[in-house]
Amino acid sequence: NMVLTTLSLSENEIGDEGTQHISEAFKINKTLASLDLFNNNIGVEGAWCIGEALKMNKALTTLDLGSNEIGDTGTQHIGEAL
Image (cartoon, rainbow, N blue to C red):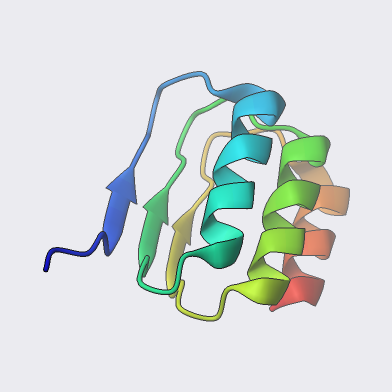
């Protein structure tokens, strides 16, 4: 039985809408340990979605959000979820 533990979607321009869909999926995923969303045009709204998902998913140990536009507000929301 194969399980997904690492997902790299870097440089795919998924934006906030794509991030919302990914966040919904990893709310219920219990095996994903590493998620790479580097340079995907993610803003505060996308960061909020990720933060909400992180409140439910405790398996994720690595999250790369470099080169996105989440700002201080998005960073704070994600930090509060951890």
